[in-house]
Amino acid sequence: MIRLGLTLLTVVLFVAPLIYGFYQYGGDLNYYLKPRVEELSLTPPTIEVVGYDSRIDLEEGRFEVGVVLNVTNSLPYQIKVESLSFDVLCAEHEVKLGNGQLREPVVLGVGEHELAYLDLSLTPQGVQHVVFEHTSFNIEGPNAVVTVDLTLKIDNVKLKVKVSEVEVETTLPPWEVPIYHREVVGLGG
Image 1 (cartoon, one colour):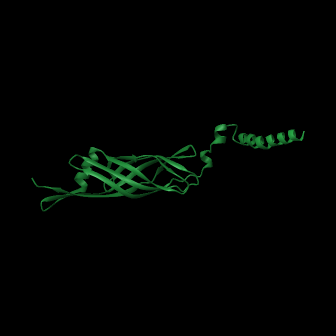
Image 2 (cartoon, one colour; image 1 turned 90 degrees about the vertical axis):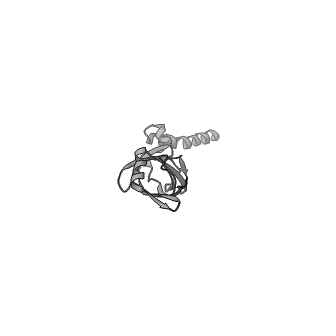
């Protein structure tokens, strides 16, 4: 009899909180098992530009830039940066040059920071703008020195982050990336 009473008490102590919690979430098991957006205090991860790699060939019309970011998670949850997409503009002339996106998703634990890579690509019109407005050609002895000097504005930034199986999309303020590329080209025949 005591064993039956203890078993019944154990079941009640285990099941009663589950039933109460289920009742609190309106009988919706999905909300009961996963947090809702209202329950999460979300701030976007901190993003800082730490460098870039340019692949510029003006003769071929190629202007590709890879931007390296340091992304820091300040939330008390693990997050996954699913996507980051944006427009690339000339900061000086406010002309749209192309677009860009996150190369691959980044997972960040609580308080961690990781490097993330963005791929930027310019349209043919964007490359033409860079050639005519931001490129200089100088002759130095038997060589030509080609210099590209401009500041890119990363604008209309759309960030998608996954937190505890909840996807959150937000927009980020614009930021700038200064680009300086110098190349020596031989003129010899």
